[in-house]
Length: 132
Figure: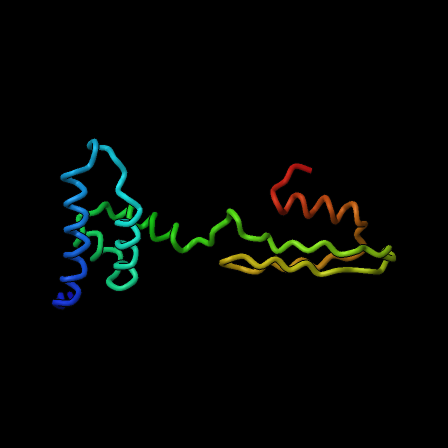
C-alpha cells in the first residue's frame, strides 16, 4: 500500500471541500453534482488513480468511472465525420478494393473483390448502422 504524500492530500482535500460545500448548499437532495466538480475529480483520477480518488472524495466508484470513460470518449457532436465521397469509375469484374475503418480501439480492414457499386453502398450503410 502506497503512502499519501502531502501534495496529493492537498489536491484531493481541495476538491473534497468543494464537493462537501456543494452537498451542504445543493438545492435538493438528488441534485446532480456540478460538471466543474466532476472535471476536477477526473483530473485527480489521472494523477492518483480511480480507487484512491473515489475514496478520497467520498464519491461512488462506478459514477466516477463513468465520468472518466466519458471524458476519454471523443466528442461526436460537431466533429466532422471524415467521410469523403469519391467519384466512382465503372469497375470491371476482376477489380477489388480495400476498405479500412479506423476506430478508437481497433482498425477494421475489408478486402472486397468483384462487388457492384450498389452492393458496396448497401454494405457501407449496414456498417454505418443506417437502414438500407
